[in-house]
Image (cartoon, rainbow over all chains, first blue to last red; front, side, top):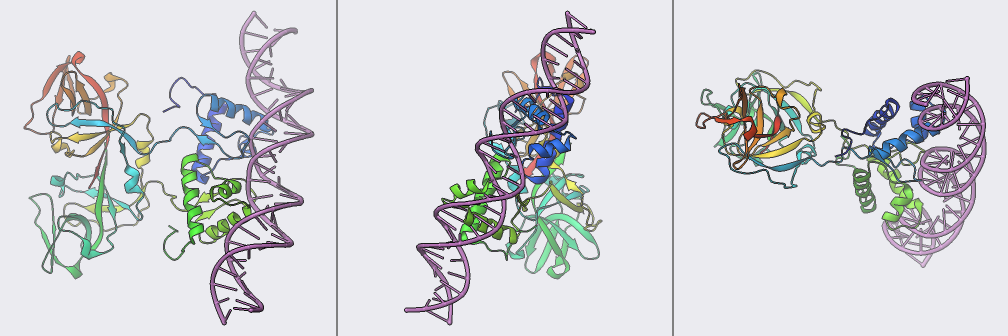
Length: 205
Length: 205
DNA sequence: TTAGCATTGAAACAAATGTACTCTAATACA
DNA sequence: TGTATTAGAGTACATTTGTTTCAATGCTAA
């Protein structure tokens, strides 16, 4: 990972760098030198060339010489986050290894129509889903593919939306909490709308 | 979200589209028509122009007319995942609202030097960190900024790496599990190496 | 101040590039 | 079979664009 300490930018360089990052995020392609010129309020491409050269020398950007709009931000080239190893949450078992496996969050994020919900309450606490967590859900296309024990978000019309374990026994639907202090909810299929099934849990501390 | 059903592509169009997506992912900028020409094994820009026009009409791409390398993939423009509302994990409280808040996972991912660890064991179960979860950690730069109660990954040389609550009392360091069946570990500062503090938890089901 | 250096403005050039056009070959269809 | 449609090759051209060069300006340190 570049762009760390030791490569301090001048104000002008930093302003340009931030503008470029923003532009490329918005447009998915590199700006031209004359565009940057205008954006920086300059009347000549030379200062931009100079700043780009410095940004390149300091490892912030790169481009293909002579080719139009071929800049790349060398930062932020990561696919997920490196998984450095495993950590014991029990005894002291495993040491920090140096695997290069990748935590592919994007695998979940890339699915179509994924949505997130904020969790209120503690009824799923035994499933390690706590108050304030975000749950990432996937819409349920075919109800009949839902397996018993899946965690789903379901709306019971007139009551509200809730996150529960799903069970089907005969014609009855049961929504069960992961917390002994909550009673299972028994429903008929026509009294419940399933919004999604659990894909992942995200908790920011 | 475009690119769904109804906009079927011919084989040639699809091949080009996939190649473009791949190129733009790798290089962070749009390819030129002549590059696409070569990649598709063609000897004239005309077929590429035609295919691009079709891709644009079907809503897959867009570009700025006359400008070099200004293509954009119109698909996949998402910042995180939409948070559709909150869901009760207790009683049936809240209904599906239509907020447009965004779950900004990238906020965490954008931090420098973030790394991930796989959790083994259940010693942090009362903190809702379960066996198999991924914990996203941030390196600890200044030890003295560590607050009591922070969850850290620490290496006790000769033993291994572990995930625990951090406490400092006087000169002693305590690593405490979130599980009554584990005893706190008492250490001197020189006998422990802190690798990171907890930023987020990720669990894929 | 003055010499030296970096920044900017200005202009010009050549390469890269999108676009338009014609022609030919292949394909589909009736 | 013949015609219409489509895809591709080839070419040409104007614009965009990176790059170079030179002079003017501003700033800093001796």
